[in-house]
Every structure is written in structure tokens, then in C-alpha cells.
Length: 81
Image (cartoon, rainbow, N blue to C red; front, side, top):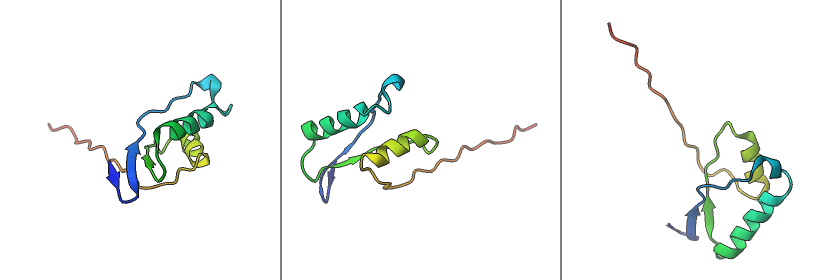
């Protein structure tokens, strides 16, 4: 993906097992990933579920800011007689 500020990537999955969360390993892994795979001015996008308060807090602490909102509506039609 190319953006006006350089290359853009979508981070699809980033998982830290529960027993290692809040130990700093996620932040260190992310920083290593950024240093080893991204250039200056690269843009990284990711999605976090609205119900995932811990995930949203983690990404905010690592420098990510809200960019857009994806909204959903589930259509449920009434059963016909």
C-alpha cells in the first residue's frame, strides 16, 4: 500500500499469550518489528475491536492513534408466516 507519506502496511495479527501480557514483551516485540521491517515515515494500520479495552489501551500506549471507525449492523428479518 502506498500513501502520501510513504509506505503503508496493515498489521493483521499481533498476539502475546496471556501469561506474558503486561510484562513489556509486547512493546519490545513491536519495537523490534518496527526497527527491523519498517522504514522512516512508514505508516502502520491495524484494527482493534471496540470491545477490546485492553487492546485499545496497549496500542495507544505504543503510539497508535485512532484513524477511522468501522461500523457494523446485523440485519435480522422477522420470520414470515
